[in-house]
Image 1 (cartoon, one colour):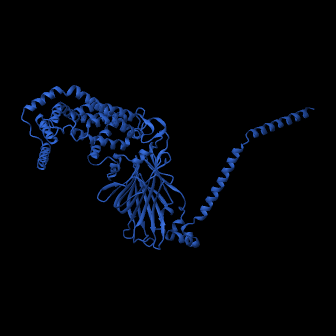
Image 2 (tube, helix red, strand yellow; image 1 turned 45 degrees about the vertical axis):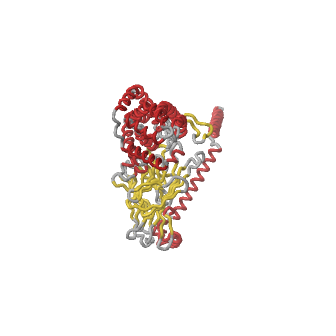
Image 3 (cartoon, one colour; image 1 turned 60 degrees about the horizontal axis):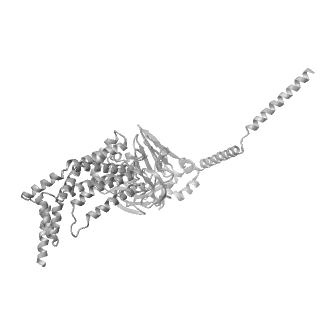
Length: 630
């Protein structure tokens, strides 16, 4: 009986163990989704294995292709001619080779031998904290091709052929040789040289032993095409500053006109720059291209729909043979459109930054850029703009003082000028002559108020060129503005207002308010200083309209402009109001001016200046001719 009892317990235990095991297996049973995923994974692995086997089977060694598989080589030669050899190498597959330093990451494809990805490692796209780096080249937005004219009258494109990569190091430099071979020692080579901490990449194109394969009687066309990615917050703003620039001839510089399907044909081109707002891709050559056809096409036509690409650029440049071979020493630049960075290469690349022509460019190069660079290196960018503006306005304050002093003198003379107007109402010419005599006798120059204002205009225009091009402001925040290089939207409108946009920027509103009060403050003095002249527009009425028109124009114009420029104008107008208030109330004394003018009237009139003298002579001649006609 004891043994039977033990057997029964054993059976019960075994049954329980099996039951528990089966229950655990049931609980851990994979779901249908998991089974489907595993099945798909197995199928994918199987397909990849088949594809790999097929690829290995289709790629023979050069010796096998020549010695053992003449049929395969003959078939390739029908389409590739002398370059059939390249298709038989193990490198004839869609692989890429990566080279990188601390600044850029480049991927070069076996097929075509050109760069298929160029990513800047220290800059992010406009979506703050997105972590998405700026890629100038990616996802087939660009290609490079040499159109080969063979000796057997074929036309082959290198972008369709396979290059053999060889990566080596010389010191800290990475050197990638990409060879399109027609034999063991006959090839077309692209050589990439990447140095540490550099945006510039060495790029050589040369041939060896191809004088029997290629038709060397005429140049080969180098074709470079690129669709520029959007990288900034406002695609419309970015579009305005995205241009195809170039240097040609004797250090001449220009760009292809903006718009749809614009084209330029040039000679002796030294570099071609596909410049985006804040980043550039540039091809430079030590041996200028004899000719070049450059094309630009606007892709961002509708800001709501066209949100990926900004412009389409195309360049076609001939590569000439020397002694039957190609040999071009070139460079690629992949980096920021930053004035100081570009200038450091000493290749005139800084010309692509639109700083303005003539005196406007000089002000930016020799005043604005050094001054702002110094300030921004010490303090935050928003504060740097404020201090920069204060320094500029203080430097211009003597000119502001002279302008206001001239207005004050004209204001004192206004009753005398009005009296002359009434006295010589029927003789405008005589009135002008007597007015000029009054100015001379009182020691007042009517042009003195205009000249200081004209001097300030170049500085104002230079600021319109400087701030939109200041790379330092990109993605730098201040107060509510998260990016001083773009608009400081504080409210997104549910609709689009023509000319204004679909958002409200605060800095332009503040700048518009400041300019309203500035014009309100100065317009009264200007109207009193400048009496109405017969036959001339009513300046008083025009100034009255401008008080309201100018702020509205600023509000509309600056709403989609960079916040840095709006901040500069806001601070500039505030400071000007302050300076004018001090000058008007504490420096310029109208009573003293009046007494001085009355004193000058009693003295012998000063000899008029050359301009006044010529103007007076012209009036006298006109008066004499008028008398003759009578």
